[in-house]
Amino acid sequence: MTMHIVFFGDQHLDSLGGAQVSMRLQREFLERAGHTVTVVAPKMHGPRSGAYDPANVDLPSMPITADREYSMSWPGRGTDRFLDRAMTRRPPVDLVHVQADFWGGFIGHRFARRHGIPVVHTMHNRVDVGIRAVTPLAGPVLAVLNLWRRRALPGTGAGSDGWAFLRGLAAGASAVTAPSTHFARRLEQHGVFGRVDVVWNGIDDDVRAATLAAAPEERMPGRPRFVWLGRMSPEKRLLPFLEAFVASGVDAELEIIGGGAQRPAAEKIVAGLPNVRFAGKLTYAETLSRIAAADALVQTSIGFETQGMTPFEAATLGTPSVISDPDIAAELGGGLWAVPDSDAPEAQRIAALAQTLRQAASDISSGTAPVPLEATAEAFRQSSRTAAMIEIYEHVLPESR
Image (cartoon, rainbow, N blue to C red; front, side):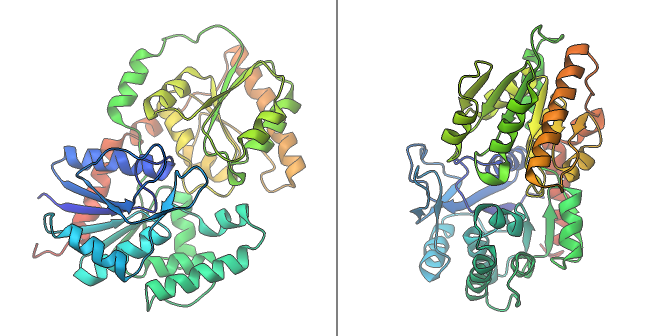
């Protein structure tokens, strides 16, 4: 049976971010399977705002970052009316798939309530950790978020911490999914939802095949090549990583992919090092090509990632990873260097990362680097992830459909 599924996101799918990459792939592979997908998200305002896409409903929005990359839409009656009018020009909706943690989540659940449509909610965000990473006033911020949630979605429960916020979002869902086993179990342990299904975010099958076909069969000679990629913000721990890289003294190349507010500070730490290069923001295919060409990917956030897509992308391309987060290391299962002391004070964590980088560089140079698990690479293909999600969709749809 074919379905019309409506995605709700906090950010437009043309903006930067792991959730946006995942949702673009989900949409593409659902459409390949014969389904219709509509994506509801705030309209972009920056220079990268794209051309009209008939699959998108771009909600009235306001920019919320200086570079105008990200925006927000207010979850209220005006947005509800705009959305309902837009949806009258589209096929009847079978399912709402909320993949948003803030305004997009509120708007999606409000839409599903008004029209009696079942909801699958994918949790992408460890809200409590993320907010603590960017503000010293996490408690008051979470209290305000929960107040906002109760007003936007009446009857979704009390509480003022991050788990209460996620419980409230999940209250209207027929199914909840998470992109990793460790995050799913935490959601269950904190009463967010009774049973959380694990569906990894995936990699584009075709781009993966093309990337592997273009990659050399043997390692190119030269110094060990490390790559780091992501948003340059505190929770990603780019600055501590660069401090560790400098302290390690490794004779290695380092490429840093991405952008964000911490770039000037990052460049200052490694100023004068000719073996460190900032590549800026690259396309999806370019990024995968750089990962495949590297000897090791470095993942440095701790406790924040609900999956951490980059080590999985690296694994499926045959590139091992230096992993700071023990949960991500356990999820990958192999093909990595695990950084110890994840619970230690920051100075000790930096020293442990520096030592792990030295070990990784030594293993790479000697030809003894770990090899990613083949099973992980196969299970990360988007086609298999879409098949798993379709099973969940079909389970929650009314039998009378």
